[in-house]
Image (cartoon, rainbow, N blue to C red):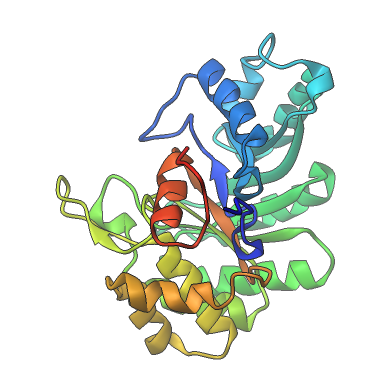
Length: 287
């Protein structure tokens, strides 16, 4: 049985093991990430996501051989002005940040000042930069700003939160569909974070929160890129029937994934297991 990861799923899931709800200890996360990178499903796995606060504390020292060439995604949890220092702190351990992700505003705040600060830094960061924009006030204007900067040659894109510890952090299918279509219209790639624990949309029995499915998002993005508008994209995001969600994705298995860069998950085994069970990845065993 072939165990090759389809091209559509390449790099879909970044390794966010140290973040909630997994909260893995950093030494354990680094060890597990090495295992993922050497496994048959390695093509599905993106970089290890690490907070700038850990990097600046020197927490990687002694965990990584400089010759190893560890590639990470840097999450800016210490403020935009601290990003250059966090990158400098990676150098002694031979670690490279392939992407930098940072919030530019809190919910309800104008994202433009923080976005302007991040854009001013972006040409100094030497990595792809993802601006996390709240799905509230000023969203569309922020997307316009990002799209203009990207068209001007800056390696910037958007990031959105799709879950968390409160119900309002979970966008509705219509809200997320509108964002996906807005990014499509602006030719603006995007990342997602939080809440995407399983392939198909579902309700968490403990919290009662409705979680988006990552295969729903993949199918919805494919539809949006193909010209489907917000209502149709929202229908795919809201679907709970695996057959309806999976078959359009299966039809594009060999294509490059458009627009949606991927998402971070504190577990690699959970999405992999779902993909195997749905027949989207052929694996002889589960991670």
